[in-house]
Image (cartoon, rainbow, N blue to C red; front, side, top):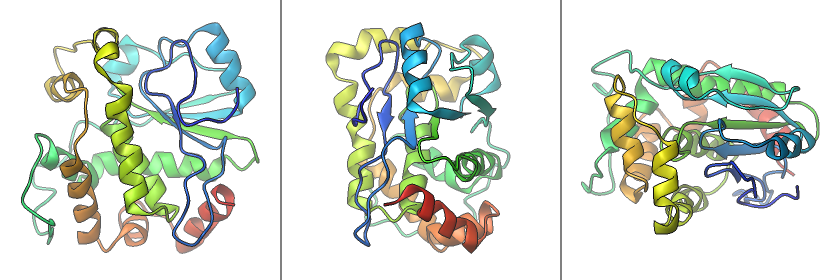
Length: 256
């Protein structure tokens, strides 16, 4: 399986590479190191073999415990699964006290939820799990995947944080985020809706998954919230508990 933006997997949902993106200092993200995806429960034996050959070593599952139990990941034998549920939020007022300056007041349906996914302590643990897996995947072709059900909202924020930490330009990160809208075109809608199944106990997840698109305003809401925390480096250090040395290591390992 050759590195390409959208991986050609029979049972993959919105399964994408984050390699090849240019950074603001002239480097680029290494291929075959970082993957983002929707559910991995429909991967075929040939998909699993291909991902094993691709070097997949860490799978950070951002779904709820119920989703994980109902639709367990199918993975290569050498891949370690790391449960890191984004929901539920642990605080009702995680945004209070933050000076969030939006470029304009255009809000999408889930903009505040996106902001809570940045500010709330529970999803912060999930983001920490992604970065820790990245630090642990030290081999040249050892790769990390992080995913949710549709690979667009929870996974979308994970990709924003990862690419931002690697100094990819915001306009490039936004293009990666909005690529979901091309992948979930009208021709795929019926099959995707079957995969992103209903969970009666998880209303928020259901409502977000049923909207098989992403919006600019949600991206802007995330970056405005990060700015309120002092930017990505301060967020990694102050909220996720990493060090400046960890950030340097990430960039050394994932950029060329």
